[in-house]
Amino acid sequence: MTDTTTRARLSHLAASSTALLTTFRRSGQAVATPVSITVDGGRAYFATAVDSGKAKRIAANAAVTLAPCTTSGHVTGPTVAGTAYAVSRAQRRRLRLLRPTQALFWSYVFYRLRGRTMRLYGVVFTAPPP
Image 1 (cartoon, rainbow, N blue to C red):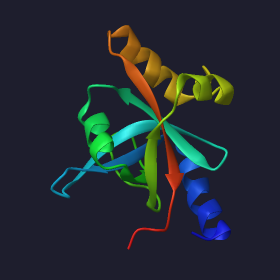
Image 2 (cartoon, rainbow, N blue to C red):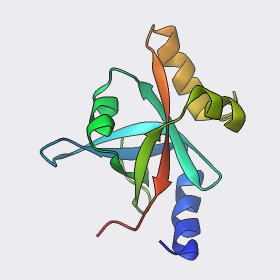
Image 3 (cartoon, helix red, strand yellow):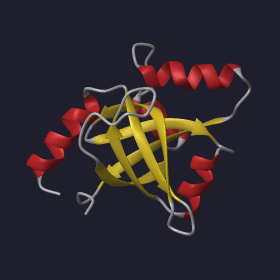
Image 4 (spheres, one colour):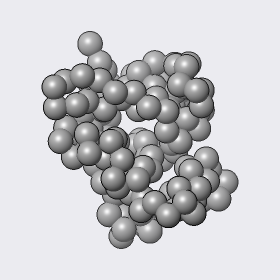
């Protein structure tokens, strides 16, 4: 993706605290779910429970798409394709992504309070979807 395209698409994601994350089943069927995000350093980050369907699908196929959306999943901007990866504990500390001023922090805390083990994922952006 060109720098200009990347910046334009990331600006839409950065302006939204929620994105529609699309992961793919082994069969190739797309599954879309709204998630709280933060954009930092040209990458997007989101958290999900380690035993969630999203986490299992990402483990099988790291290709994802993100699009800014409302909390109910209504898309409000362009879709960006990328590759998801689990952020290590050391990387998470260095990045300092879970700040109380961000929606991602509250999403993470809410699920932790419910007893879920959470994992932070990053998305490296690739070419625009076809």
